[in-house]
Image (cartoon, rainbow, N blue to C red; front, side, top):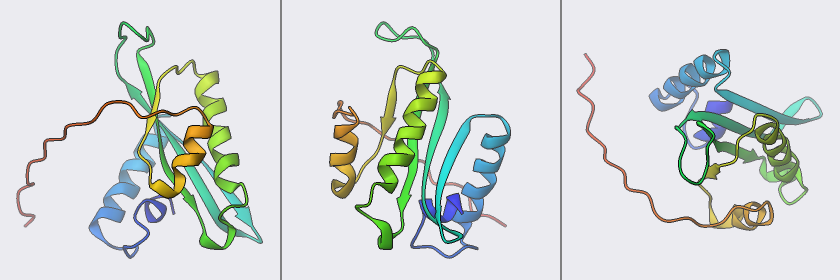
Amino acid sequence: MIALHRYPDLHAHHEAVTSYAAWVTRAMERDLYLGWVAESAGEVVGGCGLVMLEWGPTREDPSPWRGRIVNVYTASAVRQQGVARLLLGHALQEARQRGLHTLSLGTTEMARGLYEQAGFRPSGSELVRRSVPPPQD
């Protein structure tokens, strides 16, 4: 379910979905992925995850751990009803309890206001280098 929230436009057996589902299962077993879901009438209508990243201490943050908020999802039928805010609140509370001082996330314009109200601010830019994986046999 978490992988489908991450890739809502893909079907359940798509390679990206199955790879992410396998990764998140292992990460949960190692306590590196924490997640929350909201249900209504027995259906999951929202989700939010917190990934624990062993980053190493920096000048600004002596903690060796950082957190990344991921997979925030709200079903269209319940958007603008506080579901994402509630789930984000659980993630932020858990981050505080674990002593995480630095949190990051990626956002859409639709969700930017929610995160800014929670104290997130734009910070620099990211550079990414990707290599093409070898073909699978």
